[in-house]
Length: 113
Length: 111
Image (cartoon, rainbow over all chains, first blue to last red; front, top):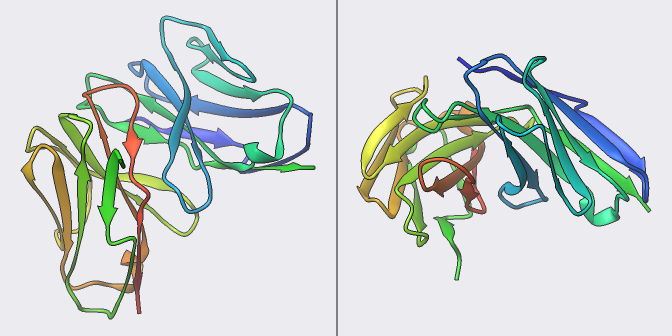
């Protein structure tokens, strides 16, 4: 089955700096890679996703890059703000596998004002 | 007008008891899930139902029994609760692939 590894487990940055979170996956059949943000006391919410036919996707201050050959993908947050502080999860999914998403272990991002 | 709603939000109970968590989604999705988030924040899939049919059943003890009376509801019943069952349980739904919509979670504490 799929195995998704996520690094770092914790990340602390100054407001305005950039933050990068990296994930690797094991199953070459995986073709959908979402990123979720979980704020304290809430459920995870999708912030950006990428499919395997695309190398990069951007949405305002958030971008995701995918390297299929190396089987890794990264989340980039620019101009970080205190409200970006949360736990971020990457996931990998093979959409032929009954829609099963395998999540990374999460990264706790702290943005210091 | 919550998309995925779970009840109860908090549940405190003694070891050995039986408890249920209910989930409802008003998004018209065909697929619903239960995830378990432990104290280290790891998110693990437990079950998935597609249009009332069980399609994913991870290696979960058979004390956990999901039930989907219709495609908008997925409930989780847990028998003979153990200390290790303490966690936050998340219900989620989506239309086959793509974005998962999560509920706010149900925090279960077993004493």
